[in-house]
Amino acid sequence: MADSIPYIFQAIQNSPKKNRVNILRQMVNGPPPNDQLKQILIHAFHPGIKFLLPPGTPPYVFRGTPEGFPMTLYPEVRKFYLFCEGGGSNITGLRREQIFIQMLETIHPDEAKVVIAMKDKKFTELYDNITYDLVREALPELNLPKPEVKKPKGKKSQKT
Image (cartoon, rainbow, N blue to C red; front, side, top):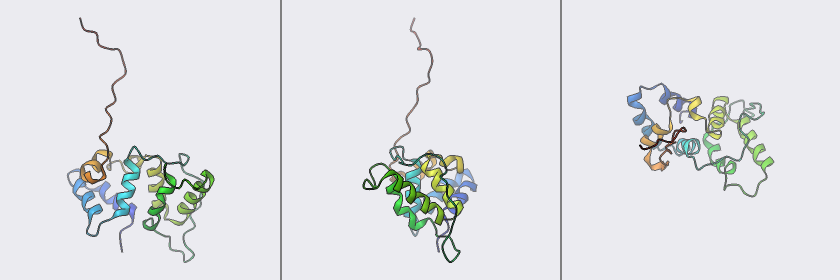
């Protein structure tokens, strides 16, 4: 059985800085490969992926499954396209939010925190050692664009 997504991210978070790239690479590429982990990182860090959901934590109550064991996030990752621009165009905004809340209610509360941080592009607030640069270095196959260099605001320099 695969480790939970929050467990994997916490292991990376707590590892020494010099090992994080290799650990992240190993966790994603396997064996066996972890495509769901890869999708979470893409959705969390790719600036071109825009979520069509309100920011913040929606009102939800963790319900778990009827047997009392919460579902894991792994099978739910396939629904992420519904919450993003360009995906799920046949559903209304209200229905999109309902599906999102239903998903949060069935996954473990720690997994829900990961999903909400991913949606709000605040992943590094949850795991400050898992950064855009770390993901970009460890997983070049994700094709994350180079970060834009922001020019400092201020007075223009004048040549004399």
